Amino acid sequence: MANKNIHKIVLLRLVLAWFFLSITIGGVVLYVETEKIDQIVLDLALRESADLVDESPTSISNASPEYIAVLQTKTAELIKNHFSVAEIYDRNHSLIVHVNRPQSAPMEAELDRRKHKFPLRGEQQYEKFYFDERLYLQVLVPLHATTGAVLGYFEGVYQVDDATLRDIKAQVYGTLLLVLAVIFCVSVALYPIIISLNKNLYLLSLELLKGNVELMSVLGSAIAKRDNDTNTHNYRVTIYAVHLGEAVGVAGETMRDLIAGAFLHDVGKIGISDTVLLKPARLNEEEMDRMHEHVLLGIDIVREAGWLRGARKIIEFHHEKYDGSGYMRKLKGEQIPLNARIFAIADVFDALTSNRPYKEPFEYDHAMKLLKQDSGTHFDPHLLEVFTGLARPLYEAIHDAGEDELEKNLDLMLIKHFHASLNRPLSATLKRLGSRLRESASAKLG
Image 1 (cartoon, one colour):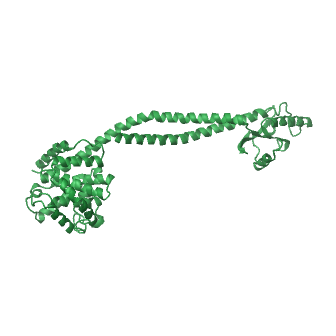
Image 2 (cartoon, one colour; image 1 turned 90 degrees about the vertical axis):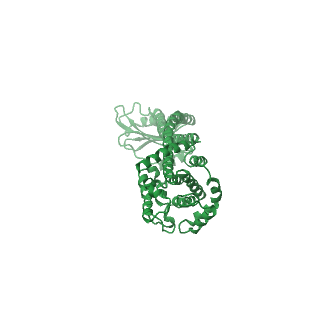
Image 3 (cartoon, rainbow, N blue to C red; image 1 turned 30 degrees about the vertical axis):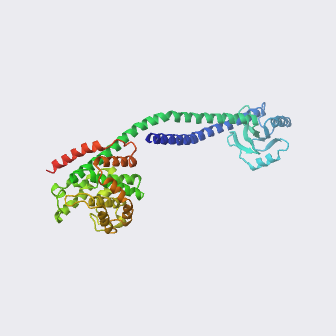
């Protein structure tokens, strides 16, 4: 599933990259090739009008009638080819010759609408336009004497014939398709490279995720063993909390925070002495104050772990009460984070139904009765109502389950909510490293 997701993501991104590159580079190529069309058509127009002033006089303005007649004849020849309208002006911009095709009144009206200025320095100028679904080029070309002096100007409307236009378009589209094909081939060639690089990064990220989850599990189990000599409380309370969270729509990152917080809710107890933590009787006021400090110790322990930022909400607030009478901040109602409100129900329910140094386990019905008595005071009424609907089958399934069975149940939750690749059971890691941490903690505390 993970590999499929990676391939899907990479393919999607490559397709998007190909699309945007095609739009961007294709647009540039289309613009450049379109400019080439203008130049091609301009060259055709210039070639056909190039011999207008062969053996020209020094000025068109004072040319003889005979030479004007020659210009008239040559201009008329242009009309027979591709020009629709052809005009010659002297250097003072006065019209000398005007020739147009029969029935060219619409084109004349179009030209009247397209007024222009004559070039100041004798440069040629042109404008491409479509008229009546045909491509035209309006050109204005200086006419030079053999000495290089500007004699006047030729203006014409050049009509691109269908065959030429097809050839030009074929060239443009061929170039554009070639560019798009090259971009596509590069994208395809990059695919295995990106997959390979991404796979290495993915494996490293996955190992980091596994390490984080295992460390979270180990640390939580080490604390649970200090308190109970087994991991079962930590496992059960996490399972209860996850099922309640799922029932109220907790998912994604919030669910992962709930699992991490459930594992580490009492991480601060590593700093509480055994004389208080394992006292086989109820704690006095001074001892209770000392026990309450495990919340602050827990916050301090996870403070620098960015990936446990969400878990901290449970560590810090799971002893708050819905009516504001809890500790350490005396938050009330929905001021208490949702995950902390969920976990408080799971934690107290398992504490009531489990053996403790100072009490025997309560039966299910009695434990639920006590929870309901604290609805709206200790617990969120809505969450408690949801928990009531799913508590019995959960209790019957896991209350008397051994560590191995609980571990398998927990492994499935980790696979579901963290990553499908976490299919390696955590049991051996938890037992081995949890035992080491427990021994180390006990040694430090004397």
